Amino acid sequence: MGNYVNNNLIRDEKVEYETTYHWITFLALKSFLTLFIAPALQRWSDEFVITNKRVVIKTGLFSRKTFEMNLSKIESVNVDQTVWGRLLGFGSITIIGTGGTRESFDTIQKPLEFRKRFQELCA
Image (cartoon, rainbow, N blue to C red; front, side, top):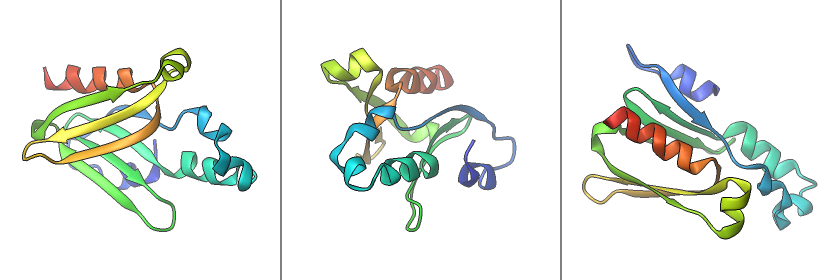
């Protein structure tokens, strides 16, 4: 589990599921131009976590962007996968909160498992 989530768990909160970027990010042009350093840092530093109380997503190493939403405030988690994404096990997730809040995250490893775990906690 990542450092950010460990340091920001609230009382009686525990991690239920955690994922990261898929290895396919190493095949992008950005990875070749940075000698594979950029995707390695991104995969090491970014955190995608579902706890028993909320969804916590932290991106960025030097500048940080966080998305934290209580499970009760999330209307749905949508998954988008291309043909290659279905074959290789990656895709995009879009979290839609009450009031129209919408956040998307690309190239996530096992996005269907992420959605399934969310749905199991909200059932």
